[in-house]
Length: 404
Image (cartoon, rainbow, N blue to C red; front, top):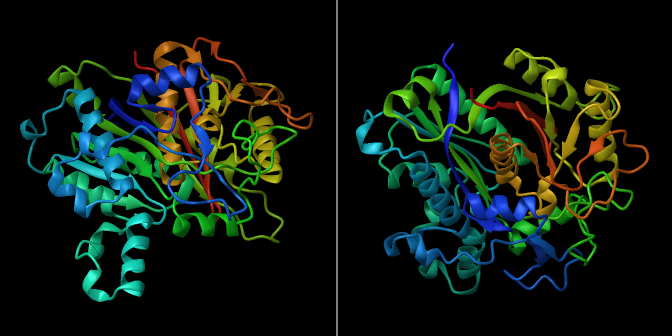
């Protein structure tokens, strides 16, 4: 069967712009969490976020696109540009319908939508941008990336919240197996505005701790909820044969296994679907739990959800059976961008033979029998398992394998 490999990465994250800056900061345990600055959050119970603070859109986005794009889409366009450049791929040299675009989304460009609705309510319809017709849309990142690079291959968008980045990569692999040479995939999100903030507060899962170093502590005795963030990763997924034929400079790894499940309805007595997703992804990769060298955890930061994930990992790998890490403690949970960034981080870990740390967490809580990595750890890595859960019961698992 056709092998799907990753040949390009583009990362926009709260603790680093660009792949190598992000990776250097992550290995050093440098966090991008801090007080919200994109709007006045002082009257809200949650006031900490992971913002991409040093991003200047005008340095990356053509002026004609500025009025019709949201902060989220600008980050996504930038990450896509970087992924294509990293892969060394010239889109004009491939068949017209050869490259597709499949991204993940949560609720679309809510910051743009909020601004235009405020104009409507306060000034009238004459003050609403014509670009509101599409700029807010959940599929806007896919659309703008495909238009910018004139990509006419199969395209789509997956809406499974935090699990979406993995689902998008799984969908990209399907297209590769159908014969398309390459797909731009992953996820970038940004919802740090009142319209994006209030629904997350209503979930009851957000942290209300004001200290950025203590606000998001998954698997810890002090876990008190999650911190939202913005950004994510775009990956160039390519047919291995096509990559070899064009002399791709870098192959980060193979998308070896993928699976998704949905949690049963509450009250049914059936277990959550995360472990089943992991087991199915391993089976899809043709390996067993003993072959996994590191797990990039979903790491909800909510005690009950952390406990459920720790139990799934212990049931699958045994007590302390595999190193587990959650570098998203340095970025926050990025909604549709989170799992894509974890997948990119796992590929970098495979490349360099080092497991990034779970920042700010001294040790796993006593009831969690997992080997939580709290400082960067060198290790021989061949296969990594990436897990994600999206609000609403979505579960996704991805196995990435080192090339060669």
